[in-house]
Image 1 (tube, rainbow over the protein chains, first blue to last red):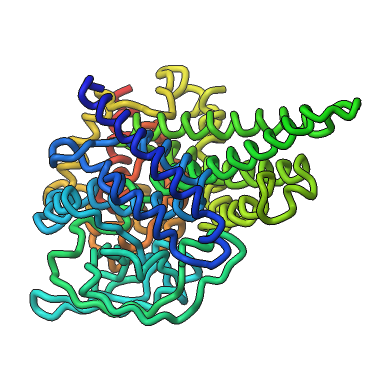
Image 2 (cartoon, rainbow over the protein chains, first blue to last red):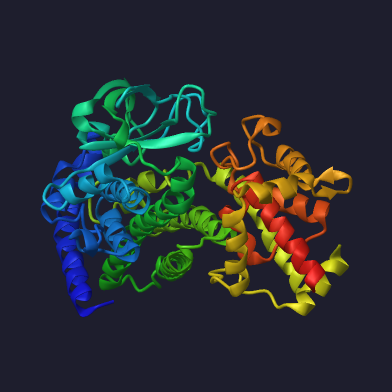
Length: 389
Length: 137
């Protein structure tokens, strides 16, 4: 890393601190009122953090995935919804930067972000495909240089607040369900009719309502790379790393509250040993393991990025499975430490919001589905053991 | 089968599974893969019999069995993208095991990437390079 880059990234992380403080301030009202975190996302925009990953070659700051993960973790601890929105936006941006820079239209969009804080959302979920990212029912309809698309999107997180929506669709009406493209649709090209309401246990501020998306756009807005490759080369790994960072942030915030609770007990000695201290030490160890596993898989991914093997895909899937489960365990134990003070909403020791938010982790792409796929990938591990005999 | 594996690993220590870098062998393979769209290469594959069945036809059967594709593999052109046809990474692993058994080859870790399984032709190129490697050894 050059000295200039280091200064720029440190600057980026410094700016993130202000956005983190704003997100934290509004986390409870966002959760309570089931509303978009306007203040937190506004702070991300004004701090220029939405475009922080635009490469230096395009005039941006070129923040690394590791830096994005650090910001996602801090935001996740402050307001999980704001953290997840930051993560989902960065996943779209990574798809754009990794997979579409040989297309003039997409390159111009990336450059436009340097002067305009555009928020990207994705419409990859569709009713009728059983939650499979790699299948679409809707298809791009070509009309000369223009295209039309209608999608029954069962979820578009913060769709109404986004400046562009990245939608998957079949290449054309004759294409197989798996023959997908990713098309970037600008806000003024989309009509969103809400078909379901996001009233959930947690992650309430992501406003992941269901919509019928109707759009008209130019052919050139379709990313040139097939979506099968975008998913494998960029999207899946970056999603799991950024999501895991947000979940780690939620767990760290809950642990922080538990720690504050134990410290308060220590200041008012009852003459008895602190009941929560041992458990606190235990979850601290768990949190450290989560952080270490994210850092390790991040390093594997960065190293193998240009030539990712199935073994790397395996490590990334396994990371999602373990972090989503372990982070929940940390928050759960933080609740036990804080007791009724943790169970109560509001107050410095409340971990109810954290617990509700972290419960989404095992469901965002169901762990059961990922475990089944990962189990199949494990066959290469068994084979390696056999070869090493 | 296990005996075969042992003899392979005894000759050539396997590179680290994670972060395998481009080895000379892999670059060599890439060369073959790039050439696989060349008409003569495909013609050779089509007419190169394997156990009485042309290699590409046998690969087509294996992809049909293990690939979990959403379309008819029998009709698929040899250079068509199998990922767009619904092939997933996890299915590649099963397909690879099927290929190893059918052709009595061993895929080294550096070939366990998406590009190896991209099309019927690229799989044939990989199997051919492994067969040739085995003969040369």
